[in-house]
Amino acid sequence: MSQIPPPASVLVVGTVAFDTIETPFGRAERVLGGSATYATLAARLLADPVRLCAVVGGDFPEAHVDALKSRGVDTEGLARDPDGETFFWAGRYHHDLNHRDTLATHLNVLATFEPEIPESYRDTRVLCLGNLDPTVQATVLDQVTGPDGSGPSLVIMDTMNYWIESAPEALRSTLARVDVLVINDAEARELGDTSNLVRAARIIREMGPQTLVIKKGEHGALLFTGDLDAPTLFSAPAYPLEEVTDPTGAGDVFMGGFAGHLARCGEISDEAFREAIVTGSAMASHCVGAFGPENMLSLTLDDVNARVQEFRDLSAIPMRLSA
Image (tube, rainbow, N blue to C red):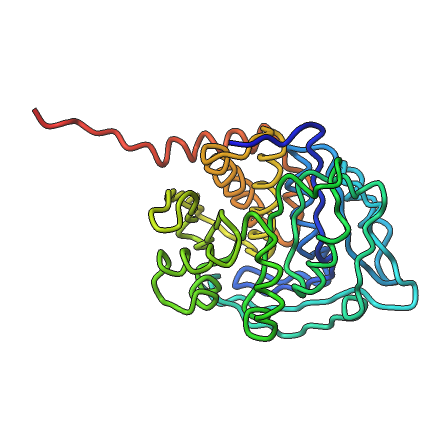
């Protein structure tokens, strides 16, 4: 077990965007989105300070920035290109909400984004690398020195199939420098080049990250820690919901809640990772109840704690031992 000494600051580097979302239950036009938006809103419920590094265009409303600030997110690292347009994504979800079609992706200012980490952010303890070009993620790692110059106490990274396919060498180089990788089951199978998730987990962890979290959507999440050949496994359920409005951002909320819990408890251990998975899952279950980050902008710590208790009740296994 190792510690995350206070103040356990969290820095999220990712995207702030406009999203247009279609689901079987409705449509939302150009709502606030982006991985850094969702992750910082989740992390800030648990940790302080929580810092954001991203880029937006001249079309980005100041009201959105104010909304993030009102929730305690430090936006000093949010760069604005007054002559450019903000990253835009549009997607349509299928009826089961596990699959979606991308209708439009306009990188706009994100296409030339080269993060410059503010001096005040460089002592960050917990660094979250959102889904970006792995070369860009590596430049962030080069800039975050931690309080004593030896780097962050914990580096958590996300990636996706696009980078697995288009930048495999850069991705592996960056993976060798991170502590925790958070990806979904399809990405794990592709990165590990095998259909078996347990085997894929061992292959991925050999690339660098000693802790691996595999998200399985409505089927929960898997945690792999410990020895590569005899790993310690933990499986958390997903919270069963009668209504899901919009799953966009749920994975980023999960990562933010995961990071925020570790920062708050100040501990890096199997027990803390398990708690962090349940905390992230609890937050994600609230996120999907409305379009965009609407629910995250009003979520309280009491809401999260109540849902965590429901997770505990849900996964309890009472057994009557045989005589």
